[in-house]
Image (cartoon, rainbow, N blue to C red; front, side, top):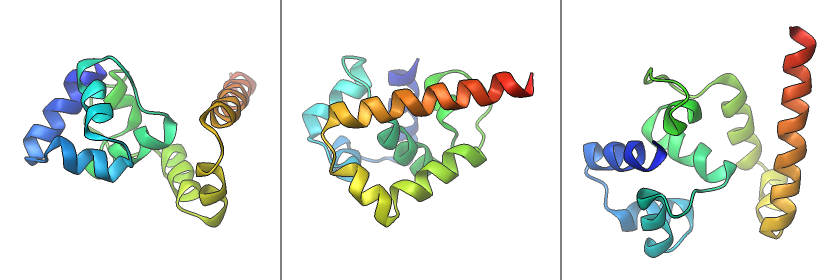
Length: 116
């Protein structure tokens, strides 16, 4: 679902794959793999895409059929990514970023369970 949604949004805005790749800081070939489903961007990349198209990450991933703006949680994460701390985070090796994302996901899952 993500590859189709990504390509549809890009085509609607008439953006080239190179433009999107530059936005995400990846090669055009890497971006192309996002549209074919061979790869998927990390959380920070998903947030940048969502912000660029003014949709939620859930919409991009096919978890929400409504074409909503970024959720409050996604906006907070994007603000972090654009902050000084986010700059530090972006310089970490991808494996370290994945570990942090794993813990972040666990934290949000635990917080959600507390509310239920």
